[in-house]
Structures are given as structure tokens and as C-alpha cells.
Image (cartoon, rainbow, N blue to C red; front, side, top):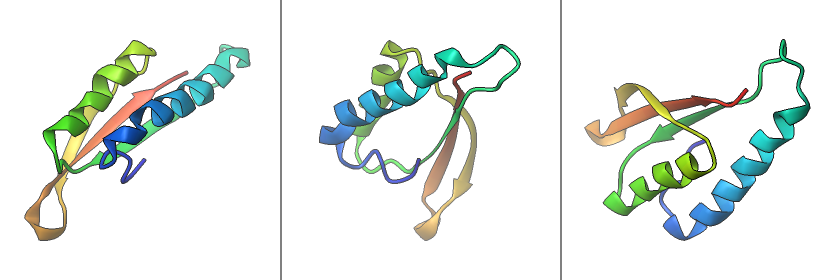
Length: 84
């Protein structure tokens, strides 16, 4: 996912969409790997961090795995969640 955090009003829709995607993996066999979520995040406003607890509520836990310097020397955080 990229550019999904700047519009905080869309968070409920984003969370519902991710919940449907992750929920659709319930029919996977134990040997199948479910989806992974990869989020590149550059903070524009502190309220964007509200996404993380919203995802936790539906069982999606993001883990920060890296940070890179983006355009204008602004930090871009790399987050991942395995949902299988």
C-alpha cells in the first residue's frame, strides 16, 4: 500500500477492505501462505497514525521493518503484516 494514509476520512473503508481480503483467506489450507500487507508510510500529519490501532482491532498487526530516505530527505517507514 502506498499513499493510503493521507486521507484519514478513508480509514474506515480501507480497514473494511483489508478485513475482507484477509477474511477471504479462511479457506486456505494450512500449507498455503495467506496475503502479506506491505505499507510504505511517510508521515504528513500525526492523525494518520490512527490507522494502526484500527488495523489491530481487526487482527492485523503491522511491524516496522525498515526506513529509507524519500524525496526531500524525508523518512519513509516500511511496515509489513503477514495475514496467513
